[in-house]
Figure 1 (cartoon, rainbow over the protein chains, first blue to last red):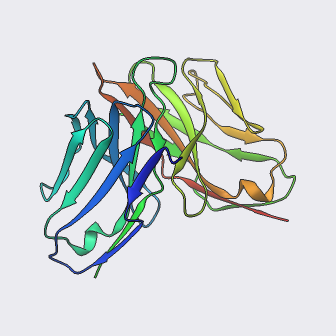
Figure 2 (cartoon, rainbow over the protein chains, first blue to last red):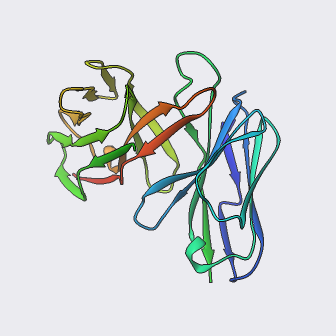
Length: 115
Length: 115
């Protein structure tokens, strides 16, 4: 019973294509996040959603568009892929109020390679 | 702004050696502090956390103490095992109001433990 799942695990595509990465959590959390991890392992937040509402948008190019159809899902769509988009993308979620509200639970990551 | 600085890796140790990974932070107010661990090919997992000054977080033999006077949260373990080989991330968390809770990560430290 996976807590935070992402699909696909690997994604190889050509420059200029459009692709999507899906994320689902079955933890009952109401806040979800997307992070980008570069080749040097540096991890940076891209977006966060709370109850389907955008909360954090960290100056990410507008080619990246998150979509949250419901509290359990946060998908990431990327238009016109560029070489520099190659990275591992992690989805995460965190619970609402309570002692663990500031803890984030990460998915296994999606390795995107743009050729 | 908020930032986290952790010691550059990689760190290579023999089994049963003592581990210290240094982490210092810059933040306004009173952040919470975290150590996350990323095993090869996986997403990040919370290792331990501390939410106020002088708190000690501990888990799986790892410890870190929130030192406000030195703005530090160094990770220690008395006797490392091969299975501890991973990338370790120090992070600080701040609530900017409402559900806007943001983690800022350090650059990660790769630990390799040899038998």
